[in-house]
Length: 99
View 1 (tube, helix red, strand yellow):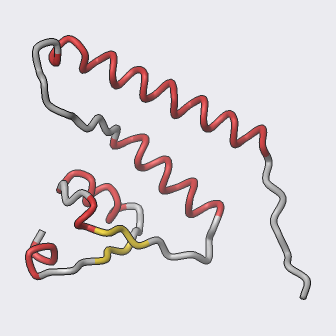
View 2 (cartoon, rainbow, N blue to C red):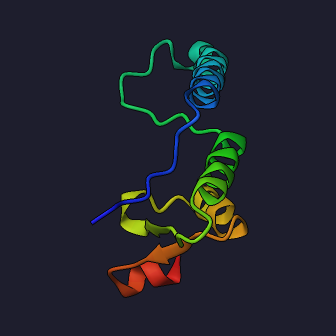
């Protein structure tokens, strides 16, 4: 059985990875002064980076409909971005539905 595999353009993948790393470094640098004496884990998330990643996903796999598990991170800001970008949601409870 022959499989058709799409050729991956590694140069664009490396460029995207570098861009993500720069964005992450910038986000952490912005937050660092506020977290000097904070001893709890944090999540740093860029809405714009999330939006770009979803758009890249749609472009790379146009026939795939992504589903986000709300229980993974039910943050309303994340869900708003994902909804605007056409992501579907997987929910496991009424509480998740009400978010």
